[in-house]
Image (cartoon, rainbow, N blue to C red; front, side, top):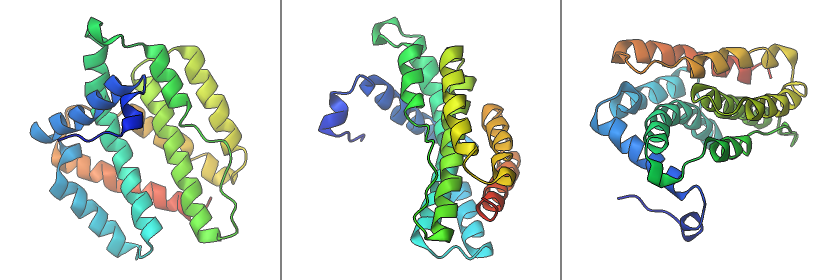
Amino acid sequence: MIVISGLARKSPMLEGLLAHELSHVYRNITGHPSHNERLIAGLLSLFHDRYKLRQDYEQEILHRVVNHVQDLYADDVAIKALAGHERTGFRFEQLGEFFLGWIKEEPANSGAHRRDRWINTSILLNNSFAISNMERHEIAEEQIIKAKTSNQRFLNRIKPGAAIRFGYFNEFMVNLKEDISEVEFREQMKEYLRSFLVVVDNI
């Protein structure tokens, strides 16, 4: 069962939201590695233990970082289905505006330095997710440029050594393969999560 809020029911993106959630179900049913609960739980447990991630916000953000990959794979299904069904009224421009709304330009600066590092690395991944999704589905070029310009303002406000890592995450997300074995997916995700934690320590 899929539960949506009353507010979401009035959203112009309602069809997209439903398609997205159903695409997660599809990925589960068809056994795609990105939605293998045992594999994902094992990865998260491995990194929680290896890097001693005890804070709730650390575990929550790491889960979100994994979820970005799952969402990309779900959106591959959802967007293809919506674009191929003339009765949905689906417009790529509307989708582009939706992803533009994800981009954040301001880093966190609360004074809680470790937490801020985690949040800012999460913002970097969040921006990468939005831009990469737009690129995977060839959203209008002017919207992609606008998203990259907004993201660059964020990158200019963090340490250069962390900002330069954006390219890795963008490339990783854009080039996620549809046909991938569990072994290959697990190894790619380990590198992805290690790279995320490197940025946490250097942002």
